[in-house]
Structures are given as structure tokens and as C-alpha cells.
Length: 212
Ligand SMILES: [Zn+2]
Image (cartoon, rainbow, N blue to C red; front, top):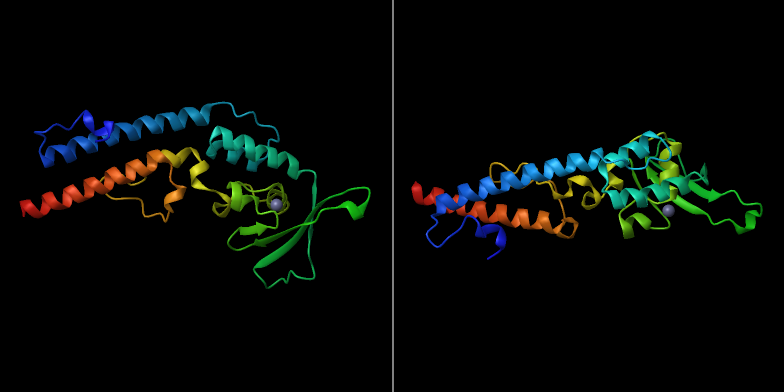
């Protein structure tokens, strides 16, 4: 059995005691992680651009992912964003942007096409970086900046790269977060917490049916 259970489970632990002890242990773990989250947010993140978007990302991404995001943010300033007027209709919720560097020789330009849904604040870029790495590319960031978006929209935020990845919302009483999260988006701690909660839910249900 996992070491997590060892401190409060023995061969003579009753079901009720098991559920109560497991809940207390999870509460302690939850508080410890909240404290770590707070410390992480307080740590100087080496802000470079002093924009609202950067400040927001500094407060939500893990340290490593913030560095990766910041690289893209700095690069985004070197891109020119132009609305593709032929494809973007005012009544359409999608706007199409051409994103490129202003080079002396226009022939050498690489054009990146960004499709942006202005209602859902979602979209995609031809380079597919978000789909591969889970952080928005410089082209999408350039579009967000042009549109004066000051916080990274949820559509461009993969939860596994945030400070809250280890947190289990709605942990007490025994139910899982209602958020739709695919299993590969969960961190090992989160997966373990979810499995523990599922076990506890099962134990609680079986205890309740026996007591009735
Ligand atoms: Zn891109």
C-alpha cells in the first residue's frame, strides 16, 4: 500500500476511522500545498515587460513555465500583427490575423496565421505551439497584446503548468472537482489525490449503506 496511508492505517483500523484519518491527512496536505502556492507567488519572478499580461502569468504559472512564457512574450514584441480583412467579417466571431516580422526583404518573411475567436477568447496559430507545449506562442501573444487582453484567457492556459495544479478543489466533503480534466492533464500528486478521494468516496458510501 502507498506510504501515504501507512501513518494512519493498521490491520485493526476500522472503516470509519480510516475515512476520518484519511480526511485529516488530506486536509493537512491541502494546507501545506496552499502555503507553498503562496510562497511561490511571493517569489520574485524577474518581470521584464511590466505589462498586465506578464504580471498575470507570473502569478499563475509555475516558475519554469513562466520563464518559457516570458521568452515568447519578449519575442512577441518583434512581430507585426495585421488583420486579414479579406477573411475577417465584422459579424463573424472569428477574426483572422497575419503575424510576421518586419524584415528588409519582404520575400523572406514567414507569415503565421492566427485564428482568434473574440467571444470565447480562444484560437489557434499555424505554428501549433500551444497544442504541443501548452503555452501560447509569440504569435498568439502578439494578437492578445494587440487586442489589449490583460489576462491570459482560459483557452490558452493548461492547468498542469499552473501553481494550482496540485490543488484539489472542493476536496471536503468527499467529492471531486466538477472541472472536466483529462487524465493526462493531471499531475502525479493530483492523480493520487483524486484516487484517494475516489477510494474515500467508495468507503464512505459503503459505510453509509451499512449504517442505515
Ligand atoms: Zn504561433
